[in-house]
Length: 114
Length: 113
Image (cartoon, rainbow over all chains, first blue to last red; front, top):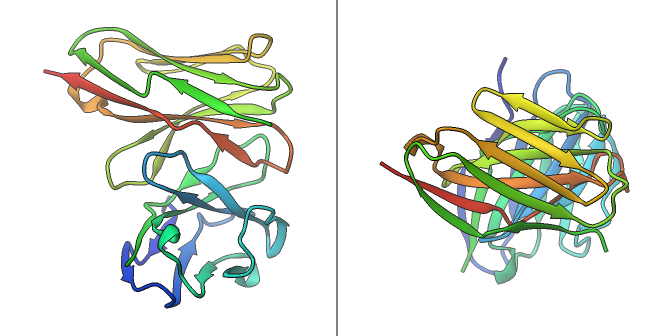
């Protein structure tokens, strides 16, 4: 079974530029999560999708971050414009459903904003 | 505020030693607790998932326990090996929002040959 795929693996941009990350979850997983992990911290949930609907985006900085999940499968996370404090690893995870199933994580995208 | 705490932040042990990693959490009303491993520059690998109704889970040399009443979980690693060196993260689903995990900051484990 293929795991969660993410691209790119690394990205360096200047502040005020825009960037987009892509995630392809495990086939058949209805729930998809985007997390932000700042160096030395545990991951923090940014947004959660159930199929193609958003169920939790309470911690997403909506003035600069946006996300969508096309047809309930792939997802993209966008930052526009980027700030220095957005430097982090962005992790995508998926699970068959929330609550009782474990979450499977992709390798992450390391973003550096200069 | 729902929080997850992991102590110590770092741990170094000689190969072959049995060790315990600790995780504490506020609010005993949890759905489940999950232990992850994270290698440098990599994503998270799920190790064990303990449902609210369970007391422990085992996988190979790993054993995780859950005591909701005291707000604690432990991850026991038997006969540690250098390949076990990684950061171990504890994450709790408090049930606030459909499977939202709250993570601790992790314990960085180093197993010396």
